[in-house]
Every structure is written in structure tokens, then in C-alpha cells.
Image (cartoon, rainbow, N blue to C red; front, side, top):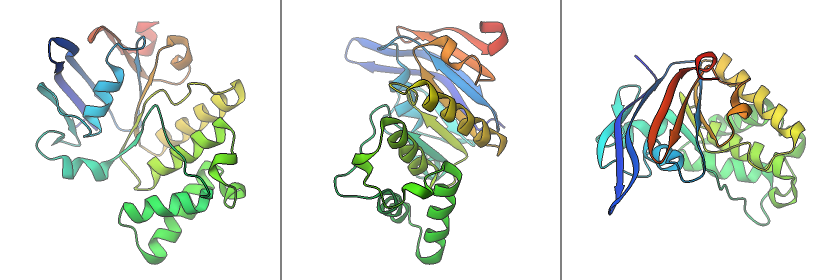
Length: 222
């Protein structure tokens, strides 16, 4: 069974067809690129997968659970990083991650262990006591990624995570995502630049005006 299976997903906003019959699958340990220009329907699709919006027709299944019918079953299985992620004034990296670990329902020693594990894996340990607002965009992005990892998700949904990053931060992001895939996590990552994902993804789909133009192994699409 695929970790994520998107089945004929359509989303209408009045007369606007934002997503039009989109279908694809992502397997365990695979990185899947979702590529298209701004306004193509990438974010709308990802918000539906992340249970933040409902499809007009079609569905998306995460580990077999429908995002429409069983969002409560889906949410513990995924980590979502939106294209605009916020940080809080006067909050350190450690406090930020601990706050969201509490929101995920982690308690006591288990919460402390999970926050420590995420900081170590993400390379955030040395930044524990730094204010999130004092960090570079690349480091803030890494904190946002850490937040998405707190519940140890099966599926990561990352909306334009490399946008605005310098070359070094992009390389570090790529290595982090490869390490996560090696752990068996399925990753859906969007970008408006095909070449940006060519060295990272196993497979990809190209979307324009809500419709898929192509989908398959990265070697066949390039």
C-alpha cells in the first residue's frame, strides 16, 4: 500500500477549477516532486493532503485513511510545512519546538526526548537558546522542518521549502531530506523549478492550471 495515494482530486472555488482530476502515488522512502508555476494548484493539493481543505471531488489516502472521511486518523501520520511558516517573537528554538511537541500531545520525558532527537537530527542543538527571529532564513526553515518532524510522521508534505534559500542552505536541505527518506519517510515536496528537484526526487509530477501534464520516474520526466 502506498503511503499517499491521490485519487482524481478536484477542487473548485466558484467557477475556478484550482485542481482538476489530479492523481499520483508516493511510496515509503520515496521523494516525490510536485512541480509547476505559481498558481498551478500545488498548494491547494497539498493543503487537501494535509487535511486543511476538502476536495470538491476525489480523495487522498494517507496509509489508507481518507483525508475527507478520517482526518483525525491522517493528522498523526503527517508533518506539514507550509510555504509561509511563522516564528514567534521572544521564543527560543528550544521553546518553539517544545510548544509544538505539547500541541502534539507529547508529555513529560517522552516530549523532552523527542524534542532533543529532532534538534540533534536537524542540527539545531547549538541554536537551542537562540531566538527564532534572530536566525537566518535557512535556519528558520530548519526549525520549521523540525516542527514538522516532532510527531515522527510517515508522510512529509513540504510546500516550496527551498524558496529563498541560498545555495548552501539548499544543499543542506537536500541532504536532510535524503536522510529522512532513508529512514523510510515518504516526502511530497513542491517547487516551481524542475531542475531544483532533479537531483533529489525519485519521481515527480508536473502540474499547470490545475491539471497534471506528466507524472512518473524523474529520469522519464527530465
